[in-house]
Image 1 (cartoon, rainbow over the protein chains, first blue to last red):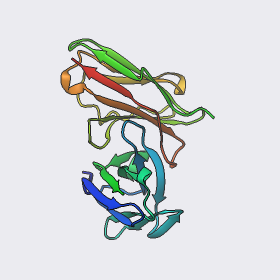
Image 2: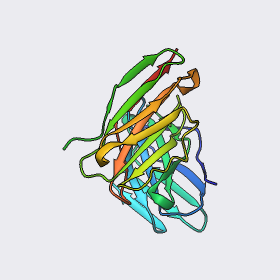
Image 3: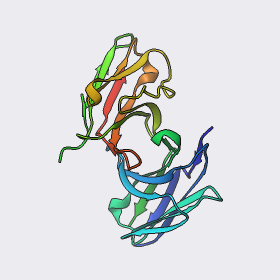
Image 4: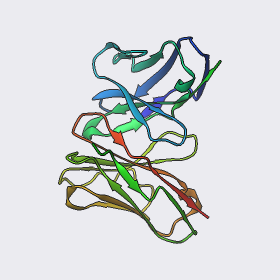
Length: 109
Length: 112
């Protein structure tokens, strides 16, 4: 079966750094995606990791450890507009994605 | 270029009626996916089309749900005899093999 866990909610302060963790147990692994979803909108792609290590893209970075079944999304210099849900998703056989329940991030002034 | 489009954006129906939701994927994308998202929840996979292969229907919650993809492009998700628990946002996504999925804006279905 597929199991992806991430915290339900997190709160952080504007200008700070926040790390959103994701652990997974899946049959097959072709990569891990992070998506951002603002309330009432469609998810938008943030990052993709298939090899172990850190991928940096501006204020956002994503880390993967395949041996531990673990990933995190790191958001630096938080802005109010970063308040959104962050979805961790694992690609397994057949190009399909299995999503976690999402982490709702609230950025406070 | 045009992204994934879905119609209608909102649909209110009465319990027991049938509904059809439409998805126009990005031109050239061979794969198309349907997901369901209940309020405050993650995305639940429903069905996946890849090229001319038989679709993966493993996520459909009951036989009241069906989907087709005509000509390898437009897809229609049909829910027969709708129930209140079918109320959710139905999201469509498309991609080329192995790349990130691009999502449409969704159809918000409300079953009264």
